Length: 330
Ligand code: 13P
Ligand code: SF4
Image (cartoon, rainbow, N blue to C red; front, side):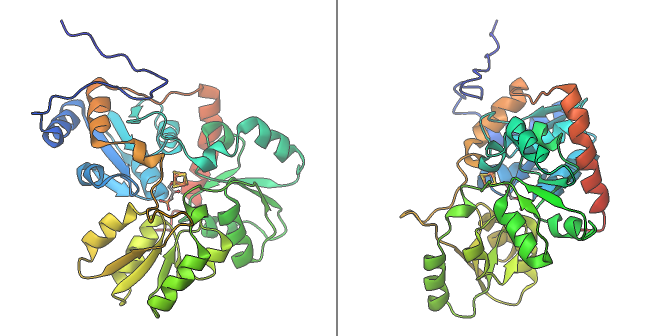
């Protein structure tokens, strides 16, 4: 009898050879049906995963899908905080992450004990946390937001109510400038968006005058000031579909370009260059997931997201507030 492979928690995924003759795409489809599983994927996943997904979206879209699914198993092709959010919303469902080590620099930058000490310095402030944080940090927050609803949510908070915004200082700074707020910011950044080069972007704009720059708000202020449109991954995608331009410069993780190009095959998308010599802007965490790992995790139903129930209950409240406060956002 075959022995079940054991998850090596150091490696973070089932490390098992796959029969080369197996049609993985067909097998994933078969397993999804057999197990009543749904595959949710973020835009920063490799194209093979995006093609297999039942839903592709930004963090808000994915959280909403996780909230409404009636599947027994959610395979989350994204990073840990996203799968954790799905589990917080769905305690009785099995939530699988193809590679347990798929983390996020923003979530890592805001450990819950340090955040608790930081919060204690501002007792009259409420806490709005970007969804890119751990369940333990969410549990210390009043409201969660994503890049697509952050502005909408902050606008609903009375101007005389002081706010701590964590963990993304770039998104928080962008909101402070746009809404004329003075939110206290936790000092975290996304390692991918932080490294876009303003100088190289300006050179690109000289080469391609009148080409709109579409940027994610996780980018640093010097890059954002050159943007014609700032929004979440889904919002950037929609903008490129509806705008009349035929060429765009895109400042976010390059995985988004796959759907943008599929939406508009006749349009040209130029990735904004990072500071480093290489011209790619891939999130090393997101890219830990592969179609093979999706197959193995669905087959063996591991690695699974688990968490302390008291943290889950406390983390659920600010997520529910977010969903409630951003109902009107499509
Ligand atoms: P959105 O897809 O919500 O814009 O967020 C991007 C991101 O940070 C994913 O890591
Ligand atoms: Fe985190 Fe940045 Fe990767 Fe998104 S792109 S998962 S914010 S490190």
